[in-house]
Length: 379
Image (cartoon, rainbow, N blue to C red; front, top):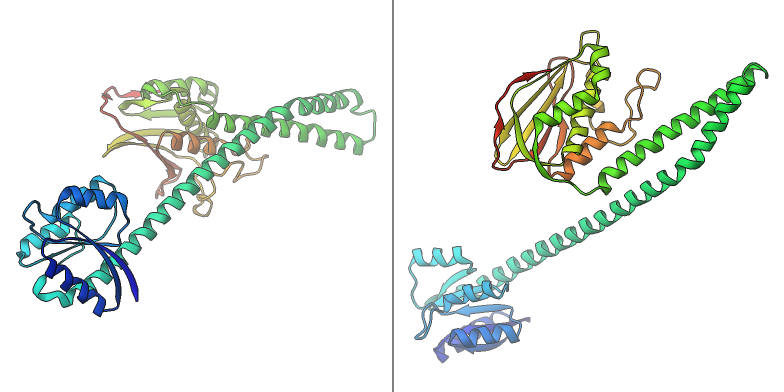
C-alpha cells in the first residue's frame, strides 16, 4: 500500500468519498482532510504536510484552482490535480500551464490513480533536482572557501619565504663574486647553479605573490574608459614596444564598469605576450571589441609564433610554460592572472582558433548602458 495524505478542496461529501474509494481500490492508503474556503486551505497547508491536493474547479465561495496561487505564495511544492464535473479543454490546458499536474473529470475517475502516480513521480524528480542544486551550491561555497584558504596560504607562504630567499640569493651571489676563479672549475659551476636557482626561486615567489594578490584585493569597480586602460598598458610596455618596433592598432573602445588597474594588467599581459612571442616579422597587434547581448567581447590578435592546438588547454594554468627558459624568459603566470581578473569581473577568456599565423585571444566583460568611445587611434 502506498501511503498518501491528501488535502481535498471539495464541497460535495459524496464526491469526496468516491475519489477516496477510487484511490484505495488502486492500492493507496489514503488519509485526508477536506476544506471549502481559501482561509481553511491556507491554515491547513501551514499547519500540516500533504502529498497531494485534489481541488474541485468551482466551489460556492471560491475557485479551488486558486489554491495554486496560495501554494506559490507559501513557497510550497505540492502536486495539485483538478477534479471537476466539467472543464473545457482550453481551461484544462490553462490550469496545467499555471502549475496543476493534471485535470480529471468526475465521471472518469479511473484516470485519477495513474494521474496521482505521475504527480508523485514528477514531485520526486523535482525534489531530486532541487537537492542536486542545493548540493552543487554547497560545493561551490566550499570550493570558494577552499580557494580563499589556498590564496591566503599562497600569500602568506610566498610573503614569508621572501626574506630567507633574499638571504640565500645575496650570499650565493657574494660567494660567486669573491671566489669565482679562485676554486676549481667544478666549484664555479656549482656556485653558478646556486645563484641561478635562488634567483629563479625569487622570481617564482614574486609571481606567486602577484597571482594571490589578484584574488585578495577588492575589485575597485568604477566607470572605466578602455581606451585609457590600453594606453596605460602601452606606457608600461614602452621599452618593449620601442625595442621590437611593435605596431598596436585598435578601433573604438567602450566605457564600462571595471577595475582599471586590473584591466590594465589584462591588456598589458596580452600585448606583452604578443611582443615577446613574435616571429621574424615586426609584431603587429590588433585589438577589436564588439557588443553581443549583455557583454562586450574583446579580441587581441597578433602575427606571432602562435600556440599549438594541443597546448591550448593548458595555457591558462599557473606556471605552465610552453617554451624553455633559454628560449623565452618568464614563469608562465601572465595568462593565469588574465583569467583570474576576467573571471572576477564576471567574464571569460579563451584562445580562438584561426587559419592565419599568430594568436587570437578573446575575453568578455559584462556590458552596461554606456557609451562607445568613437575615436579610432593607432599607437
